[in-house]
Amino acid sequence: MTPYQNILVYLDSNDSSLVAAMYGILLAKEAKCDITVMYVVDTKALSYLVKSRIFLDEEHDNYEKDLMTDANRYLNQVEKMATRKGVKLRVESDRGSAVSCVNSYIRKENIDLLIMGSVSKIQSRREELASDEDRLLRMVGCPVLIVRDDERIWEEFEEDLL
Amino acid sequence: MTLFDILDKNLVQVPLRAINKEEAINELSSLIAEKHGIPTKVISDGVWNREQLGSTAIGDGVAIPHCKCKDIDKCEVAIGLCREPINYDGHQVKIIFMVIANPDNSALHVQILSSIARLCTSNVCRNLLFEAPDKNSLLAVLSD
Image 1 (spheres, rainbow over the protein chains, first blue to last red):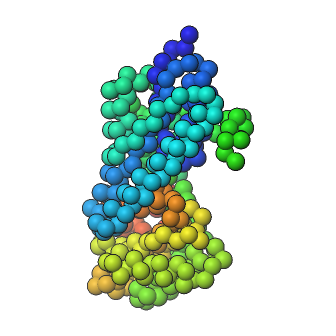
Image 2 (image 1 turned 135 degrees about the vertical axis):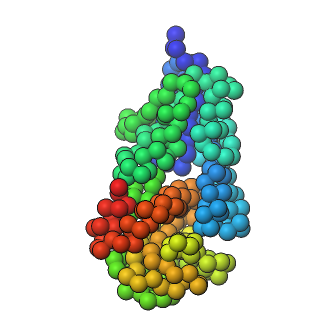
Image 3 (image 1 turned 60 degrees about the vertical axis):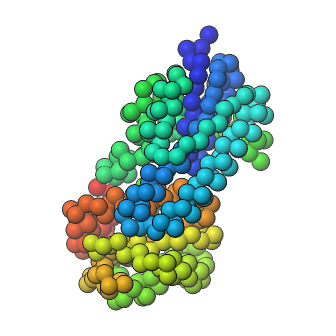
């Protein structure tokens, strides 16, 4: 009997979140629990870039389309990996800020474990709390599992990634 | 992912030799192009195409020219600090962050641009960057 029935994996464009998704799939298979993978298209960052006069409105729209395409690509990849492991996985995508979208999903769906890739090394004090992973770690209302990059996890999915 | 996570110190030029926008874009483009073994024009053409849509000078002495380029693996940033401000579409620019990303890495591109935007929002940070006497001092401000 696992203490977790309903787990959520936060997926983004970083390899570390892909490792988290792999780990989540293995955990869900072993624990026979529900698993959802969520990708948030960061439209808050796009709006910030327009407000900062770095992006034109036209760029905002083009990048949003590109990010949606990326989201679908990553979610499809994870869904295929889960299928090959015999795990039924639910995929979710949302737009906005990762922290608020994930937090709201956790509350709405009674998620009891959030799985994320490893948070990056702190290179600059100014950026300490800037990454979505850092903020999620501190702000979500459920237990959080951080998955470190591990060769053994990649090996489990080696054939799927070829 | 932040600016400092991906910054290659060899792509930081203090001071920038350029005395106008065109030279500055060429100088920074050549740093990135040289690293990736591609002609400077591949980078600078992409940057100029973006400039034609609207200036990338964002005010307060900062310009952030950017574009996508399939010859760059993920995302590359070149930074140039001018001793004297240069005329950049009517703006007096002291520091230029050139950001070039692979078209398949839009999320990373957005993260790095956001990281630079946060950095340049602070008056204190901006002034410390402007006053950096050499490359190491500028990198120290970025890593603070």
